Image (cartoon, rainbow, N blue to C red; front, side, top):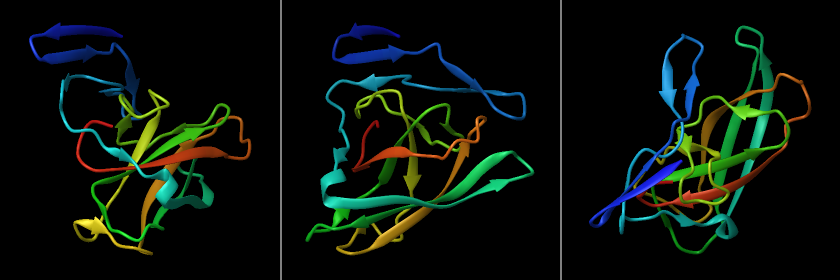
Length: 153
């Protein structure tokens, strides 16, 4: 990864790319980030997140399931909401919205979890689909972090 500074803008380039199942390439990693731009907030300690319902999709060979995030804090959390997923072993998130550039651990997949309103109220649960490639067919275990707000993940 190369980093170049031009006045107040930092440009980060990554030569990583992923080949999707249709034979086209999509970028993976950081492309460009402006210095001083807004950053999302890690709210893992104020939320509960989980992955459930994993089952094998025989058509794709991937494991599909659902991720959920619940706001355990007394105050609403401003969106957007993303779940950073750090799977163990030879497991990869297939339907990631991107890879983390500023949220540690860096370079891990994140899944956006859509809000029904502008924020996530106390006790409210939101859900989204998740899909894993697991060629070794080992039990899927993953660490998760919840980040909210505008800015580069």
